[in-house]
Length: 165
Image (cartoon, rainbow, N blue to C red; front, side, top):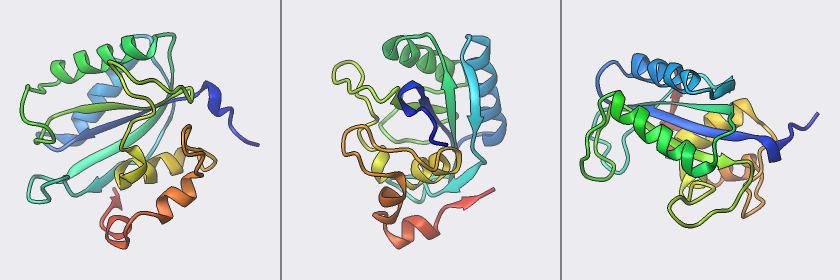
């Protein structure tokens, strides 16, 4: 049976500083404390930092959630959680304790203070592979590409360099 994608919200959580697994578990707990229901959780995946593979490796998961928050309010809540877990204002893509991205919010297309779906999600192994694990039927809301196709478009290095923990 196909999951009802129109009602689904997907988040990616990553960490590459401190106790990465603990940071991600704390982020999940804080989401739940804010009335965000976690419906599905992928396994943990380890991948190289981007764009600088010399930075510490990332640990990532993808969540399927349910929330009554608007996309912007959900984004603000995610940013609050990142700060609570120690994220500092620093240069883009620098190492961090916690990073939470909204990947897909009920297939909405939004451009403004927030861009949905996430503008680079379709090129990221650490998003696509855990997302595929929890929804093998996911389709990109803009390109209408099936997740299997998006994964196959990744480079061999992107596919072989990520590992499930």
